[in-house]
Image 1: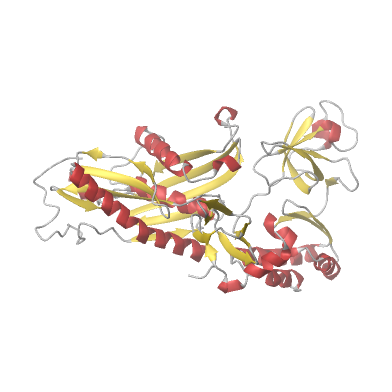
Image 2 (image 1 turned 120 degrees about the vertical axis):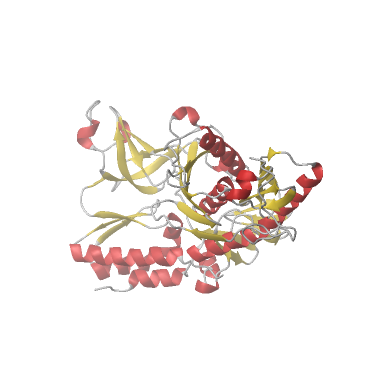
Length: 231
Length: 241
């Protein structure tokens, strides 16, 4: 969903909220976006969310989403289980992702997976492949992909990532104003590293964004909340 | 269904023991998003029934034998709290709760787009805190709101209402006495927008004419409850009301 679309439909209290099953009129001449299906020439909302009508496209900005993995996505995973030659990572999707030892970090030997990555460790990785049943394999072979030993991981709704940070200035300003290192992952997770006060500052801003998101506030107001200095 | 004809539950003017007329439903209050840790949740206070539903997922289905390769499974658990009725209910699953869990899952599966989440599971927990007849109907309605609140894609929302017969008169939305001493009970689950029937059970005997009246009462009760559901979802998500 483009940023322009998102801005177009989310004007704060005036947002039209639709519930599953809501009839949205005839489908003729309209392009169907996210959260809408067509049945016998009629458009029907299938998700709870804000209705977005932009030119001839109609879609629903959902209130809640789960991350759907796509090959190439940068994700932050948390190790949930370890076997002799692979790890299971929680990537904020319905299914855990597999990290085979061959795609894991550095040198690891069969049976020694736990010495390299144990349960609870966070890692920065990339989606290698996704099959038709939504199972995914991730890789840590690539530039910058590594174990995250410091900092914290925060979450924001995955569908807001693209809209919030479509303008690279937003992230730049956030980094410069807090003097923190930040990595944005496509699965709605953010890695933040810096001094404690700065991290607390960013957490407060992200809390505000989450609250605004629940109220279907505009993307602009969320961007404003991200850039507003707390301390 | 006791069928005790000597208990007078409706007078000659058609007024029931709690002051309602034959077609009236009990007061309904719905709140969504009441459990912060759940992906979606709702509470339904329907007369003296108080039912809470929580939705978790979609998530990987465990054990693996319950996985469906082409769709998600709805894992519904209906449970009555031990303190929900005057007689203490033994904790844990029993025949009745298994039956209600099964029919609730089947009713909801007809609207949830399960094919979008193959091999996964959507967990729906329904807990009855206070029971006063019609808990399965309140449970299905609460689960439907909780699923919508969780952002699960659905083609419609299911609303369930029961009508029955007391002293030979068909009435809508039975209360405890009417359920205990009445002659028949017809709970139905209906899609709010399309009007499709997704769940129907019948206990006791109704003639074809009485069945038609009960059907009409149930169908008539769908719209007002649907309005309350929509208001609850809008309230919890900060939309306009």
